[in-house]
Length: 171
Image (cartoon, rainbow, N blue to C red; front, side, top):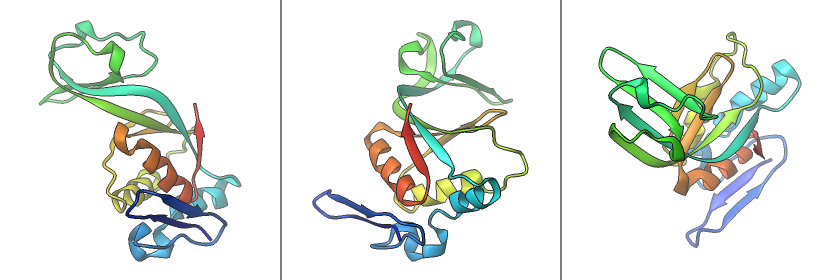
C-alpha cells in the first residue's frame, strides 16, 4: 500500500508497499489509476519503470534559426514545424538571439529503451502528475522520453512518482 498526503503545513507523507495508492485525492481518488503504468511495465518486463532525475536546469525556447544552437550540449532537443522552431536545452546553453524563452525547468528521463509497442507510458505519468497539479513539458527521442517540470515542483513530482510505483533515482 502506498499512502501519500501533502498536509497544509507542506509536510509530505508517503507509506509505500505494493497494492495501491490513495489518500487525500492523490490519483484523483481512484486507487486503480495510481502507478498503473509502472505496474503494467513491471508485469511485462519483470522490473519497475525507472525515472532518472537529471539535476540540470533546462530552458524551453522559440528560436529564429538553428545556427546559434550549441549541439555539443549534453541535452539539446530541436523541434521544427511549419509554424515554429523550438529548442529545449540546458539553461547555460541558451542562444543569445531567441524569440521567446522560459527558464526554470528540470527533467526526468525514463530509463532504458522503450519498445514502440508499449502503450500509455506518458499518459499514466502525465495523468498522475496532472492530478497533483504538476504541469509538464515532454520531449521524446527514438529510445525514450523526457518529462520536464517546473523547478519549484520537481521534488514534489519525484515524490508523487515514487508513490505511484515508479523508481526515481538521481543522475
